[in-house]
Length: 444
Image (cartoon, rainbow, N blue to C red):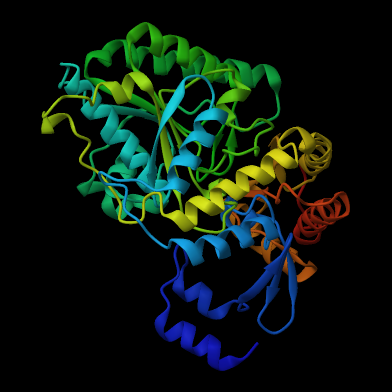
């Protein structure tokens, strides 16, 4: 590692979600290339990418189909706006997404990142109700510790205190319902907790239905909260209740969409169709920034109005539906189809489930959960909590696996294209790193 590069970094680069003081004193990590499931450091080291580069690179790094699609499109058309005009790649991608989205989700709105997609859905929901004559419906409901992005509207809908506390006084907070996630591995206790959480949600929705525009939810996994996995039945019951009360559902699948949970979309694990589906991260294979909000036709139709500018959705991003990012996304969808994802991941999902069952028996681990190609465990507070989780990730890095903790939670989120030996190596390092860092005095 060249010291001048690190010195330049520390003088000029502002890193997201990074404590500057800790960053300055810990071992420096700088990635200059990647291939498949491997990250290569400037200076020669290699690491297995245990988090798919922030939950994005589901098809591995450097996939030739996606790289070539980017290269070809860059030579033909680099940018074209979508305001009152169109271009082939955006049209083709919108059609492809409509074909694979669950149910009657059929209208695709492009944006640049996950926060922008959820912002668009929130705004669409509010304007939908105004357009159909119910302008009083302006409130949102979300789960405790929900995360839906870092723009001001998204922060209001999904307020994570340790991320967003400095901005609390400038956002409009959503109404909050308890999370259905149960921090343990007792099935009966989990079922009771889910029942109680839903009862609280039902009470809230019934009491304030006339002012609620939408419920926004991360289906099956609350990511930033700590990879909080919860039962599919909660979503089924929520869909039925919202249908009864005529409340819209926004499914934020920015993180969990595209084969991560055992289905192409997490909503499908519960057999529900939301009114809005927000996608991003893996949409382009994780190679370029792009997101999408897919709405039902009934939502889109409420924005029609001959010459009525008040019905227009006045929202847009300079690079929404960009031809190069759209070409990358089309190529990624081709790869998902050719690899028969998520069906072909089933053996890997079983390996992750078995490995995390063993992790859950370790002395420093409070509990573990898995869903599809996601595995998580929580480090016991009395065993060291978040500081120990951080120490474990550094131990994993020394052994060749890149991880990033979320408070007391450790998780594995590997590329879907990992081979069996590559996945087994990740799982072994994960287990070994916890074992190596667990204090000898810890008793479960």
